[in-house]
Image (cartoon, rainbow, N blue to C red; front, side, top):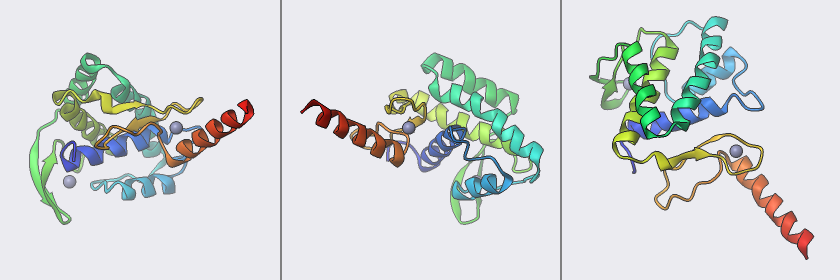
Amino acid sequence: MIFAHDTETALVATADLVNSAGPPETLGTLDALDEFLATHNFSGSRRHDEAELRAVHDLRPRLRALLSADRDEAVELANRILADAQALPQLVRHDGWDWHLHVVDASRPLTTRIAVEAAMAMVDVIRADELGRISTCERTGCSGIVVDLSRNRSRRYCSLGCGNRAAVAAYRARRAQT
Ligand SMILES: [Zn+2]
Ligand SMILES: [Zn+2]
């Protein structure tokens, strides 16, 4: 494991959230949001309305900026998110999860909690000077965020789909040459 478990979980969830903007949009409905949050084990309060979904959509560009920033910019963005949320780190244990950090209360708005989780994960990435593990998908035409948690730093595509499409394109290019 490269980072602590909760850091890796939050990095993957944040990249998935950013990449859900597409194209194609994969977080277009409240049901899709429910499924996303369940997949990534998000707990805490929910409003379950269109305003909440819109707020999540509006958060995505800010998180993309955080994940795409260089080290100094990332520091500024992470610090600002934590300050805006008046983050107060507390160790908690719930729902079968061992002691881990919550930096805002579970009653705060969903987008506040998502943003601080992303910021706290980036705090670890910045401190370890491992920003090289976050990049943009190498498939032409895709701007998906790639979080590479592999030992040998081998991940180049944001999704299995992009990896397959890039392999097919490379195969066709080789065949066209011969
Ligand atoms: Zn928790
Ligand atoms: Zn991609």
